[in-house]
Image 1 (spheres, rainbow, N blue to C red):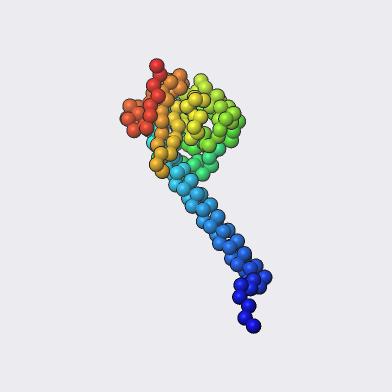
Image 2 (cartoon, helix red, strand yellow; image 1 turned 30 degrees about the horizontal axis):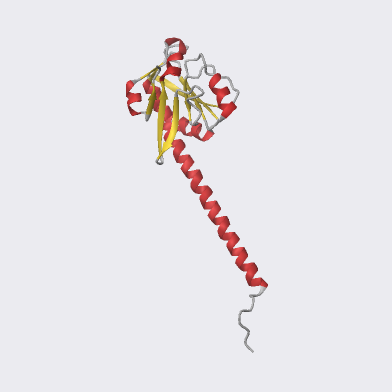
Amino acid sequence: MVVLNAAPPRSAIARLAALLALALLMLIAFLDATAAELQASEYRVKAAFVYKFGDYVEWPAEAFAGPSAPITIGVVGADALADELARISAGRVLAGRPVVVRKLRHGDSLAGMHVVFIGRAEGRQLATALDATKGRAALTVTESSEGFRLGSMVNFVVVADKVRFDVALRPAEASRLKISSRLLAVARTVVAPP
């Protein structure tokens, strides 16, 4: 007697389920690794931009303790970017000054910072960090859709898989910073005061 359409043995079903689960886990791991590599690549580009911004900004003289004082870049909430920025700037100078990179946490003092990069913070956390820079001669750089509305001077955006940036002149002028027209020429958007 031949039996057609017999159910496969339970062990075969269990093996198939295990293989499918393993394949799904491998796919998830691959996607996580790809996403992590994309973010690392994005942060490398952003770190290079943040470093170069220092060549295109003029700070008031009182922003520095003296003629040989460093340009200090504070990075809040983006340790990977801070690490890349430290690597890029090691042994180099901006506007004739050495560069110091500091990793900061939300709520740390921003005294002495000349550039402040605020990572993917949103809402109240971003507003608090930007409020802490008010009245300071510090270029603020964000990567949030709310950045400009909350007072950021430079905001990164990703357009067609490319890192671009927008510039808002009003908060820069309020902080007594002059942004070079050469930097404005390569910005995606420049928001000028009315």
